[in-house]
Amino acid sequence: MTLKHELRMLLRKGGIDLSRYNAAQSLDARMQLRLKTQRIDTVLDVGANDGGYARALRAAGFEGRILSFEPLDDAHQRLCQQAEGQAGWAVAPRMALGASEGEVEINVAGNSASSSILPMLDRHLEAAPNSRYVSQQQVPLRRLDAVAHPLIEQARAIHLKIDTQGYEMPVLEGAAGLMPRIRGLQLEMSLVPLYEGQVLFRELYDWVIGQGFELHGVVPGFMDVETGRMLQMDGIFFRPPAA
Image (cartoon, rainbow, N blue to C red; front, side, top):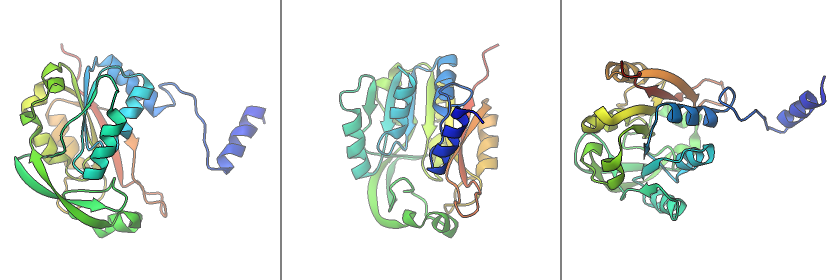
């Protein structure tokens, strides 16, 4: 056993695992390679929470524009603080995105990240008791293709990331007018029902493929730590190169 292997085993006992930072072993490096290869100039980060996704893109080397969307008041304030002074990273006014325009009530989860427009099912609560809803907030509801923002108007090759806890399909429907300029998609996809009325992986996958995208990869997500079963994952899709 080499010293390197012994060190790695020791770190694992402490709950730490190390891997090389390259496209073969790092999810962030792999994502940056995809964005570069696809010549993405703008990322629309829907369901940004406090900006973790945008910060990861920047740390991985993405230099294009980022426009983040977040409906929850506290998370939106933290998001604005994170983006302040960051070149090419803007935050849209507080709003939820969907298939129609108006207002909507969002259920606020105890862990913030699991907040959703949709009612939460017991399967979710069993796997993450701290995600129980604790309050509601009324927020504006907009279609993405009706949002006027300079970063959207300037974008030529958009990567649309959607993390809206079961509400991904309405967001996609509300982005219909932007679809010709959307070259990449990253969608949170549930393998089992976690929110009432949500569209599950298979139907969502078929819809995206029907729009002309191809699956480029998956990112493991929410899992049941008692059983090891994956409950959610991110699907990453891009359009094939033009003939």
